[in-house]
Length: 123
Image (tube, rainbow, N blue to C red; front, side):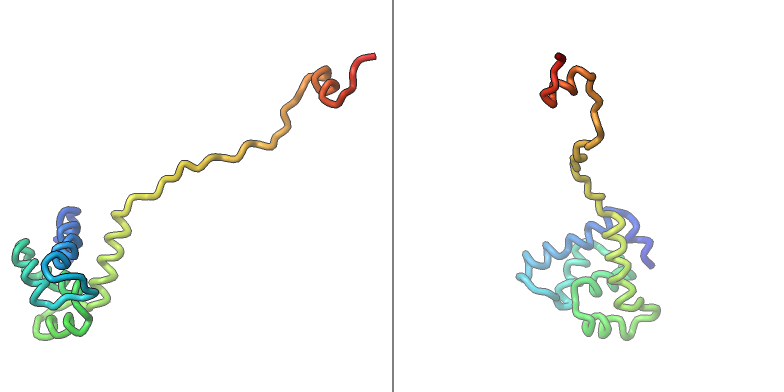
């Protein structure tokens, strides 16, 4: 079922729907299935992957109503967990320019230098 989502461009397209949904319908935490399906139709999302878009952008109740009469419909939580796992897997590792602390290791000095450091001079 999720084979279509294994291509990076396909997943990015679906995730990018949020921006289009907001531009078209305004800011919202969830959208209606009709709104999401309109975007899917525009992007020619294969019919069997509409579950993914509905689960991602609609309420759980909307997803259940959408999937009710469709055979082999995946579980709402299964789809959302798959999306999160795919996003995390694709995330770039965070690289920091961590500066290592200076070593506190002893730097040996010559006898003369050590004596001079402590104010001990030759008699």
